[in-house]
Length: 138
Image (cartoon, rainbow, N blue to C red; front, side, top):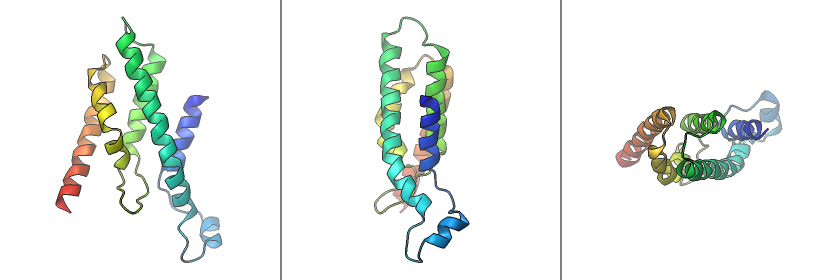
């Protein structure tokens, strides 16, 4: 159940085009409903991801053996979704701002015993590098 709720939060946080019905209801000056929803859902999503990562780190550190597959799979799915998520840009924010916000926690995951977790992190850190290059070039 929690996996479905988390996936729902990721879906709400994604930038998506407005439906014809949403466009019809909105006035010319209104921000699309999908963007409004994403802007409100993203902070909740990032908070939940922080909790998942922190719990994984604590459990991985305390465990004498590998964590159960479902725990590792949950983290890997969170990392995959975080990597592909583009936040709606508001004033002073960037599309991948959630990765910068989670960066210090993500660096702690480097010590994970699971190779797939480390591979996902490599992809995320490459994405963070692209974000930083873009910010520097502005």
